[in-house]
Image 1 (tube, rainbow over the protein chains, first blue to last red):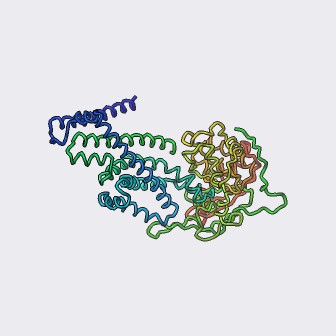
Image 2: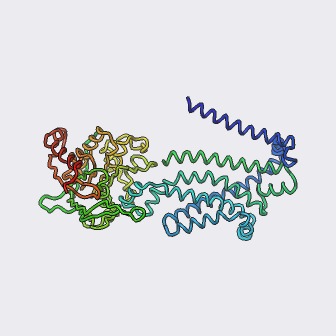
Image 3: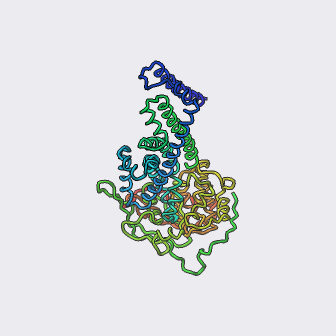
Length: 252
Length: 275
């Protein structure tokens, strides 16, 4: 089987790449090639294995994931509403496109003081996550709506579809693969957004751990927190990629 | 394929004695498309077409002669640059808005996420009506797709997809049926089979129909009248009445009269027009 052999080769390459990365990180830490701030991977894992280390990471990761999840849901919902509004009321379209682009162009760091005074220190991570998610999802949903074909649109016209039914029967189902495609990018963006949001004085979370570990020179904790956030992003991404495969199979 | 259809002949079949009602009236229709940089393309030039209720009219002509544009005018998907289009005395959009129009295009445009049954039931949902399951079942049987109700379009052959598209066009018992090369993508054998099916369906429902095709045999098997169009700009060249007895089986299509008419129309399609 040629495809079977290709799949095996691909998996072998991926495994070799991952191994190289892990071994490289370990060796750089072991021989202090990047200074004392880069501990060997085994030290980081040893820290995570201690009861206090694991409970600290776990507690704070859950807080970050909670904020990321909130932002993910709110950002996706607002983006879906915005894209639908742009579709149903064409006059809103250019304005909403530009508003989304501008919002995305403003650096988070510039928004942070504003958010802390409005959303508060605890609310800011979810809001920044929602902002990161919102732009990606607005673009994904808008392009999903635009993916209907002219014959499909003509078909609904000759059967006398109202605008609402055209949306429900054609545009919404047609946009599902693009929407889920957007979610695969939005999930890591939400976790990153929540983590950054926690830098600005949140009482808990991976972002807070990163800041305090850095200031107190707790390198094992710093790396463990970063590793936890990265793994969470990766898992969310892989889960959504599976969901996207199902969506593509089901809707096209 | 099953040939039973429990549905009674529709009331709209013209009562004997009553004057036939005008179904489609296209008068002096020009269509000019604007291309880039101010250039224009005249697709239709003063097209006249009158169709009475219950009539089956085929439009034949070479590629690019504007026959599909005529159909799009009747469907309300395009408006004429000059001239008028009236369907049952109103604007074409009115018929569509009242869900009284059935259309099957060459591009079947089935919804890929919906099953055969859901695709055929789509016009009910577009119209906001409760789906009449019995009617959908009847049409699935009629087009010979029994057993494929749950299949999705990508699992079907080209011919089966076209049959779904025709069943979908018929499901609401439309007052006007527009068919644009619905069998264009099919092989010759399947095509003749589908012609026979469509003739049988039409004989039972007597829906006013316009069929656009470039297949002369197909037009003569199905239509009461054949409109021959010529291109650039598209205009009506000749209208021929077809009065072979129905149903038009092999004994009709093998007759010398049928062949003579095929030859005459084919010659009209090929030959340049006398100036």
